[in-house]
Structure formats: structure tokens, C-alpha cells
Length: 590
Image (cartoon, rainbow, N blue to C red; front, side, top):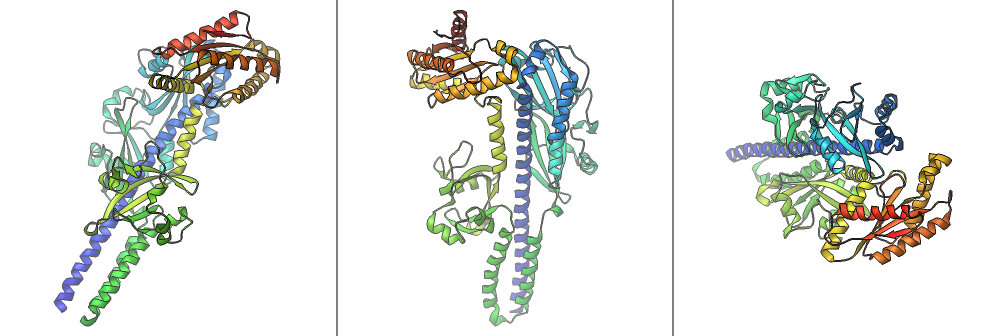
């Protein structure tokens, strides 16, 4: 009996060690995936924020005239950059203005101007050709940066480009608050492009792009071979989690790596230590007990094991589900913070077969049925990736990143971890909305028009329904600004936009594409119907006389199957031109 108890004790201790190691490994994996997801989200947020800043500057009504007239006031933009530094997280913002021929008119970091970048910067050439906003991680003469490039227009005329450049320092500072150190590394084949390295930090031939990269982290990468960490995985070394995220340019080619360090002792291990202490104490009691109560003690040990395991998952700050691929077996307390109508898992299961009953289908999100595979099976089969789900819980919508891993092999028990990323997702959607919205009137901007006209032409081709366009502008609007001032001109744009919006059909797309120039996409509308709508708008505008009396001229065309966007846009623009040439305040059908 003694030998049996001794053998059982050793087996028991080994089991506890393996269980603790498995729990620790699972915890480290979740932490590494969280680090990976966090830096990916922060980089995307900064890219969108940089675009938003560029669009904000581009919306300045005097900017385009200044660029066209080549009259740039350096103090104005210096003051603008200082405002960004004071009111945002981004302390290193650079601005460059270029004319339509890609000649530099202004650089915030240098007095140099007048030089051509046409044969140096293909990304600027692409924006000049496509007239579309671009953003990317990019390598320049000074640094590895995040760039946003926005085309500038006066009416239909392309007159220049604004480029806003930001750095990785604000991201590394934010991560530092979570006890994560950062080393942002440029691939060595791009070193020759760095004529004036901004940080002057290197690990062998690899440039370090963030000022606050710790000496210890840089020395460790150098000693162990930095290329060993060039992947999208993670390692547990030297008492820390080292996770790497690949940085790609606009062509999806890797240009560098974001390497993160988090010391394991900064991650709370109280649950693991508590687990070992309690179970070792229980083991000593079992060993000292007499043989006739061994079976009884094992029974209680098994019951307590479940209790302590439950304590561990309850200490997590994310939702943790225990599942056997068929049904929910257990959940932690955070689960009931979100599903607050229920106090126990049994209550939840009475009303719902599965948490997937709350899933909302959205592109890029996990569905209850993934092409014939149940969502839990899909997560298990793709456990190396972090996925996203959208959940509507009693009218409140959340986004979660979700991953699954096996916790008990012999019983096919799996832990499913849901991390709330609602705030990040909503922020991304808000930035996307800002990038397609006219700041003054609140309707779609030129970029939004190009997105929607492509979609509507595709639908018109596919389903063979009619499609028409109305283009119009305010007659003698320059006279309004000159006589009454730009503030009155802005008020005219705002008020008459509201009037026109109130007269349109549901499904019509209303956009401002220039200073006083507007366009309406009319799905399912023939040319005659579009003409009647335009005539109705013309009459209502002339009768309204809100702010000051104005009139507008209108051009109308119907889409011809097979024609390109540029051709239908030119036809409606020509129709508007004829309306203005024919005396204004009329509708001309092209």
C-alpha cells in the first residue's frame, strides 16, 4: 500500500506540474496573440489617423488655392503641426506639399523646395495618376514611417498632393503602458535608402526605427541573431515573451518587423501559484491519510480540481468558455458581465442552444456555420489564427477576437477565449466614415462618389436596370463669396444641401465633388425621370431663397451599358457646361 501511495504521489506531482505547464503555455500563447493583435490594431489605427489628418488638412479651402498659386506660408503649416502635437498622441508629424507635376512646394522638416520627386517616389506618381487616397508603411531617406497621400482638387482640376508622415514612436509608447517593450526593425536590404537615419540606432545592418527601443532588447537581439525573430510567431526566451509582427508596404512586401518583449513576471501568475499550492497541500494530506480512506480522498480531490480550475478561468479578464465541441460545459464570471440577464450557465442554456445564437453575420467575422463546418470545429481546426466575431447581446453590439485551444486531450475539452475589441472596431469604422464624408456638408465626398458609382454601374450591368446621373453647381458662387464672405458661402452650401437631401429618394447617392459642385447617383432611374427630378430640384432651390437667393444649373445623363466611369462623368459634366453656357438656372439633358 505504501509503495502504491508513493507511486501515486509521484504520478500526482508530475500530473500537477504538467497541468500547470499546460496552463502556463496556454496563458503565454493567449498573451502573445494579444500582443500580435494589439500592435496590428494600433498600426491600422495610426494609418487611418494619418489619413484622417491628411484629409483634415486637405479640406482647408485655402490650401488648394495656395498650392495652385505656389504661395505657401511656412508659418501656417508649422503652427498646424504644433496643434497636432498638442492635441493628439502623435508628436512626430511631417507634412509635404507638392504641385500636380510632383514638384515639392513645402517640407516641414527642411527648407528645401522646388525639386522633382517624379523619378524618385512611385507612390506619389500613382496617386497623381489614380487621383485616389493612398496609405502604407514606407521606407524613405530618413526613417521607416507611416504615410498618407491625398490628391487635391479645385473643382475637377487636379492641382497637387498633400503627404502626411508619422512614426512608430507613439505606438511603442502606448505598448509600454502595457509593459511591452518594442524594437521596430527595417530589413537590411533597405538600409541604402536611409541617407539620413532619423534615430541613428542600428543592430548590425538593421536600422531601428523607434527612439525608445531599450538597450537590453537591442543587445539581446544582437547576441542571439536578430533574423531568428523575423516571423509572425512568438518565442518564450530569457523569462519573456518575444512576439514579432511583419510590417508590409502597399505592395504587401515585407519591409521590416515589429518585435515586442514582455517579461513573464509582469503577467499575473497568482492563479497558477495558487493552483500548485493548494494541490500540493492536498497531496500531502492524501499521502498521510490511511489506506482505507484513499478512495474517499480521491473523490474529494476530483471535486476540488474542478473548483480550482474554475477559479483559474474566473481570474481571466476575457470571456472564457469550456466546450466539448457539442455544448458549453463551463464559463467564467466575465461571461455574465455581458450576458447579464442570466446568473448561471443553466439559465443561459434553458433559453439558448449556443452562444452562436447571438452571432451577427458580417464580412470578416466568424458565423455559426462556416461553409458546412460548425464554428467551434472551425476554430479548433484553425487554432493558430485569431478570428473575429460580432455579437448582438440584447440590442448591444460587441466585437470580439476569438481563439480556441485544447485543455484536456482525453475528453476533447477546449477553451475558447473571447477578447472585447469593440472600441477598436468602432474607431476603425469611424475613421473609414470620415474618409468618405465631406466635412462641411456631411454628405459623401469625391472619394465616396467614386466608390458608389463603381458599385451602381456593376449592379446596372448585372441586373440590367437603368441608372442616371445629375451634376449641378451654384450659379455665380464666386460672386457670393466675394460679396458676402466665405462664412455666408459655407452657410449657403450647408442649407441648400439639407434642402436637396430632403427631396431625394431613398437609395439616391448625394455627394459634394468640388467647392460648389455636386452630383447625384440615381439607381433605377431613366433619363426622363432624372430630368423631372432635376427640374424639381431647380425650381425648389430658386423658390427657397434661404440665407440668400441663389439658382443652380443642372446636367442630366443616363448610363449607357458598357461605358466607362470616366465617359459617363464627362457626358454629365458636358451637359452641366451647356446649362451654364445657355444662361444658367436650367436643366440640360445629355
